[in-house]
Image (tube, rainbow, N blue to C red; front, side, top):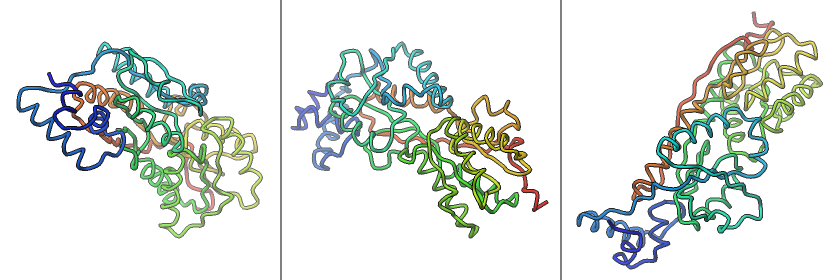
Length: 335
């Protein structure tokens, strides 16, 4: 059974270079990559294979701020539970690793952790985290992130296509003045969901007014605040695309308290299809993302990387679908 050190010796490179090629976490010179891949092939032909790492615990890495607010993000919470359930079925434990701006590579290294799941991070945090994980020398996977320019694995949904479809639906109902309510503007999810909204609006030559694009947090309270902001607008939109269901639910509450009838006076579409979206009044139209499937696939992908370290970084994208309920309808003037 070939080890990383045996591959490094045959390839004439350092063990850390072999780990980086195998995990795909950071760029490696093409010449060094080719040496490592040829060494792996030769050892495989000789009946050797890299040493499996399917033992110990999986580290669930997230910023302290995300962990503190996890209960406010039901979709993310569901994804984490599904991930834990899947790795547990493979007799792997799990441990939560909370990071802040002072975290160092040694904070990630524990004898029991064999791989990492990263979630709840901003793009800026990811650019710091991925090199940290690479230095730790173990496979990692970002969840609900596209990670196009990062050499690491990821499982995500197409946020841009999802909000583009949702916006197109509102336009087809007759809405022309549509707002966008996002979470933290530095989060990749917010940026991609905003982009989908913008593409749909521009495609139909509809106005993109800066004061109709609002940001906050992915929470009901933030949605409530943004709903109050909409109520006070001089040129009020007739509909809103919200970047999460909690945002949408909070916004709907504020609009209803302000005397608007939903969806007659104002239509709302959320994102996530959390359980509560079925039971609010009116029931919430929303983008359904496969949160449980995302967690299970993330776990399966990471386990595959642990069982076969030769596998390089993988990027999995799952489909969403628009669930239409009572919160979205045609504006009164278009009926």
